[in-house]
Every structure is written in structure tokens, then in C-alpha cells.
Image (cartoon, rainbow, N blue to C red; front, top):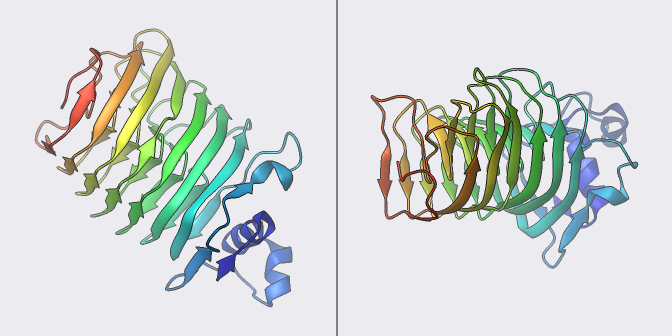
Length: 275
């Protein structure tokens, strides 16, 4: 499946989301996950500008339930936008399962209030199954209201089950309304890892800012936190923190039994620590 225009991309998103008009055009009766299929952006296509196809003031509806391979060939998906209440995993892709996503950049703004315990990322909100996300980047600006238990990442909100994130970069500036009980996990690249995964050759340069009282959320330049030991290798961070206690320039883990493996990483600045 080859995508040439931003309208092709919207059509693909509508098929994954089970939008009735898109399904009717293809004769399908239910959402298409693209499991076992490859969706590819045509070589030489540089940008899908969402502002040209989404009415002014409307928010992006994330792609929910993708299970295939998406090869972006370096595509920039620009002007991702949200200012509505976020009630499900949110990003360009809201949820993916057992997918491969390669060569996609995303820019735009994700703002507004959320419900509790969500996963929010510029590229992917929440990843399930053994997923590979490679050579992707995010320059999304986040400005989120006050809630607790969220997993917020510049590229990926949360990652599950022996996945790989390779060669991904983020310059996302992340601002979150805070309170002493927030307990969010926030990372410049990935917010939270549930199961053992590899994070290799990733980088973050940006600002992670809390607005409100000093908070005990878990905040790291590459990864916010994890529940099972994972490997972070050859990653780089140049991050400025504001209003967070004990941030980590690479990682903060709130599970002392699973400290993770950090090797060959480098960070700049005086805020936080490497691990």
C-alpha cells in the first residue's frame, strides 16, 4: 500500500479507525489493522501537512489499532494538533501492536486536559507487543493539564513487551501542569517501558517543565521510568528540567529491583544524573 498525498494518509488512518465512509469505498465492513501488510510512503514525498486536510480548530484523531509495517521514507507529518480533552492513548498513532514504524517525523502541538493514566507521545501513544520503532523523530510541543499516572514521551508514551526503539530523536518541549501527587512518568523520548526492551542510539534535546508545585513524578531525558530492566545504549541527552525532584538526564527508575542497563550514554547540562 503506497501513500503519495496527505489525502492518501488520511484515507489510511480512516481505514484503521474503521471510519464508515472509508470502509464503504473499499467494501470492508470493519476496521482494517493492516496486520501482515506494509504501508509505504512513496519515495521522494517529503511532507504530509495535516493543516491542509483538517478544518481549522479541529483536532487530530489518532490512528488506533495499527498492527502492520509503516515505512515513512523520511516523511514529515506536520501540524498535528489537539486542544480537546484526551481520553484515549494519543499521538499520530494512538495505539499500535506488534508493528514496525520506520522513517517518520512528526511536528505540531498536543495540548489540553487529559483523563488519568493515559499514554501520550508525539508519534505513538502506546505500543503493545513486540514493536520496532526506528529512525523516527518528534518536534511536537506538549502543554498538558493536571492529572496523575500518565506516561508522556516526546516520541512514545509507553512501550511494552520486548520492543526496540532505535535511532529515534526528539526535540519535543514538554510542559505539564503539576501537583505534589501527580506521579506522571515523562521522558524526552519514551515515557514508560512495561517490559524488557532495547533503546539504542536515541537522543533528546529540549525542555521538560512542570508548572505548579514541585512534583515527585519520574522524569528522564531519554526514559521516564520502567517496570522491568531494559537496556539503554549509546543515547544522548541535553535536557533542561523545571519543577521536578531528582530528574535523570538519561533515566529515572522507580523500581529499585530493575535498575536497567545503561551503557555508552552521554549527557550535557548540570540537571539530573545518568541513571
